[in-house]
Amino acid sequence: MLTGCPAWPKEFADKYRKEGCWRGETFGGMLRERADKHGSRIAITCEDTHLSYKELDERVDLLAAGFLRLGIQKEDRVVVQLPNIIEFFEVCFALFRIGALPVFALPSHRHSEITYFCEFSDAAAYVIPDVHSGFDYRRLAREVCDKVQGLRHVIVAGDSEEFKALRDLQAGPAGYPEVSPGDVAFLQLSGGSTGRSKLIPRTHDDYIYSLRLSADICRLDHDSVYLAALPIAHNYPLSSPGVLGTLYAGGRVVLAQGSSPDETFPLIERERATITALVPPLALIWLEAASSRRNDFSSLQVLQVGGAKFSAEAAGRVKSVFGCTLQQVYGMAEGLVNYTRLDDPEEIIISTQGRPMSPFDEIKVVDENGCEVEPGQTGELLTRGPYTIRGYYKAEEHNAKAFTADGFYRTGDLVKVNSSGYLIVEGRSKDQINRGGEKVAAEEVENHLLAHPSVHDAAVVSMPDKFLGERTCAYIIPRSTPPAAAEIKVFLRERGLAAYKIPDRVEIVEAFPQTGVGKVSKKALREAIVEKMMSAADARQ
Ligand code: J2J
Image (cartoon, rainbow, N blue to C red; front, side, top):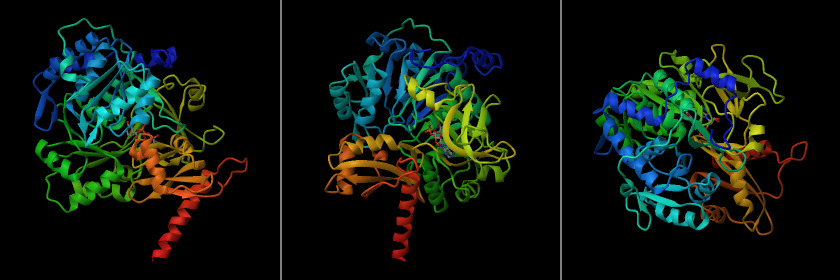
């Protein structure tokens, strides 16, 4: 394993191999096999471009050779910040093939996040689009280059200006370094709870196992058409079963440029999509829009909703509106993924977040003292298994807290397990806000707020929201003159924080409520904001 990545203990690795979970596949090999088997079948559709498995495989070879010629080596990290475009696949598979590691940034990340990913992972290169959704990534790259000395290359899909153009990287046949199934294939991002996102090392073996199970549970085959409406660098649309699970099954990926009904409904109709994945707020928008439009959803077999809790009320409407099966997905980039199964009774599909996908997933629900709760009671979910990491990349101190001594990952989610083994997510013990599927680590935003000259102290908490589930509220104790909310938001934006992390609301207070031991009571702050929202609503009536 790459230095800084905790491996599975030998007895577990042996077991996962013996039980047939890890079958010794690599991503480079997987694509080659699909190309040999499915050759002329279309692997990816993006607008009017259709790329076959064979074409993808050939392009990946040319680019892999190009990366090698550029000096990118096995185990080098490359921050990849690409939207839903074909180049995402070319770049990732080319890096997989030479054993270099993509670090998956999201298109919404800005220089605060990207600078950190590049520095922390000691990245050799950074790959971007030219302009996407009206944002010029080359400008961002310039800011990042000013800060990160070690970054050797910026590679641009499209008009590269002073940087390297992706299209010019292709080179002739090359010998590749040996890539083993147990090698780390890439670094995925955690939602984060203490400060910045942690980097999650996923191996070829463990991730491909999760793809195989996911594709199987979702009954994907080469007739499946997966519509990617969410940003594909995120673990959910990447792998549950997502775009990679679809390619694993020999199906077709259709890349949507946005997730709105205007952009996606005609695509579902035109491309005859069979499955797609949404986060709850988007599912609400789709439900609303579908009832008043006349699109043809007859191809759609499965609509997945996950990333945040989906209300039973909305879940109950999916089948009648879209005429397809709802699948709830409760997963995490660290590993464990739970699905409701396609043939589960409606009651289970509507009111649970599914059950673990592998018989080798181990789960425990524990109280604050780490003791297992009675069956059916709520507690924190701990898990370990063949596709759940044993530790974050270069995070020894944090790993000691985030994992138990015997290797269980502490999810920070409060769940209960019903008598059939299905999980129901009840809340969270980690200091994170789940803004409709987008995760905001309170501490990361607090650290930025503390850099403001008028801020003495800051505490970021969630507030309930009908549409997103939760929004972010920043409580601030000012030094002297209280800053205006707008000023705080501009300040954070200028510090290069992704837009989804900018607090939705800013509250100025003189002091924070405290817990018995004198810590800031976030629970009391959450309650205070709810009370304030309720009295404001009362006053309006
Ligand atoms: C409640 N909370 C949920 C759900 C995730 C598949 C699906 C989602 C993710 C993901 C993923 C939830 N109900 N249905 O990686 O492969 C919250 C939990 C969890 C955290 C993980 C996948 N589905 N969550 O969302 O790493 O708090 O992965 O621990 O971004 O999202 O977030 P993330």
